[in-house]
Image (cartoon, rainbow over all chains, first blue to last red; front, side, top):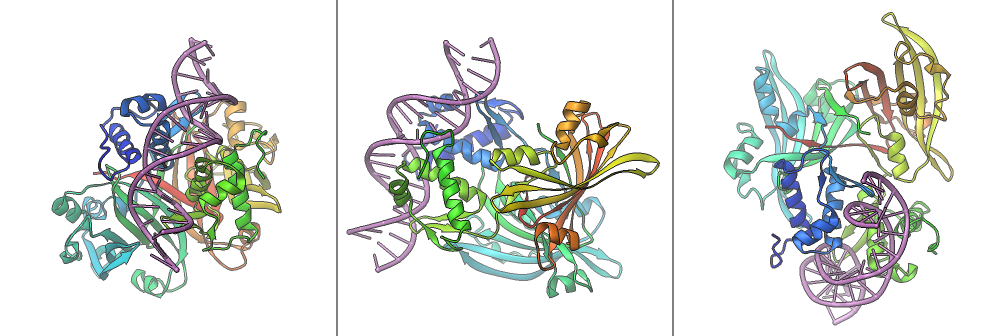
Length: 235
Length: 235
DNA sequence: TAGTGGTCTAGACCACGGT
DNA sequence: CCGTGGTCTAGACCACTAG
């Protein structure tokens, strides 16, 4: 049940439980989850607490509420081929390309009173005549989650591999926004563009299955990359 | 003050008031707005109602709350989140916005030996002082699938409503690519941009459940729109 | 210490959907 | 009709920030 003595808010514990039930397949896409009244009784909390948990999951896009009917699981089937968010390295390996990673910047930084490891990399593939860079990405990794991560050499190791195998933390979900930006001098140089051209930037946060935030990331995509998606239309 | 007899929820009226105060410049970017306690007293509602109003505005990106300090205006731009082609009309209805559609171009066109109805629209929402356009979209609709579709007035009717209710055709899947582009003279005029700014363009095809292609679309998004997504990470 | 937002309780009444 | 979510009240205690 819920831990009423710890510091973790009840609504957050409830959120985690519902999320896990969905991920584990107890509730499938389109299913109704138990009603607010049911959840109140099951977990012995008030409706406010239940509604706070559900409302967060609705804002996250994982649930949808329908007046008079119930609360439904809404597993988005949006599949983005976003190479950074799901494994740049793996993707290139499948294509028989050799990934290249160049560290542009690494330092510890403080934001909102939290300690982060900041890592800026240019990433691309090896070609006969040099390196073709495809993305520039900046990651902020909380040191509370990844103590000592600053000692790894990310020009040799994949960030996600280190996360998974050294820390046992598995990225599972990302929420992101996509924006157009103008390339600056640095990006133009790295991507080898001569003229001013608009580029795509993705900015988002990465979470584990349990909803813990493990990375904040900004990626600038080279004009050589395409950003594609397949989506189901609702309603 | 607030209208307690009407059908409009108090929290929504309060939301509207705060939004307008920000737009009118009563609170500027970075300012604190009155505390939750203050708002309770001023409008004679409970904290739950105040918090619901504020929480909606936070989710919209217009406000940010800092524990122990206050609630701050975060006026970048008003952002609308759209993640697929289907939701525009419904989405705006949920936000209590009035959708506006202006037909820029309509004609029949031939492409690859197929007859298409070509429809170019600017779409947006009605504001006090005019219309805020959010997208410009070009649709190519095969006349073999939609015979006679050119006779509908799409400044009054939703394209997807006509598809569904007049032709019994239900859009189900879309594949799309996202690209950055520079705004041209027309887009700048419609979106009200003075300078050259990069914009997002989405280009794709829409299919029924059975896989029949029913539409080719290009959409240019206004800088006031956000392109957001939640995605699962594979592997 | 005073004021802010964060969490939570224990109720109430209403509007919507399906039987 | 009953069960669902939508709105709202009137409190309480806590944690954070700043003077």
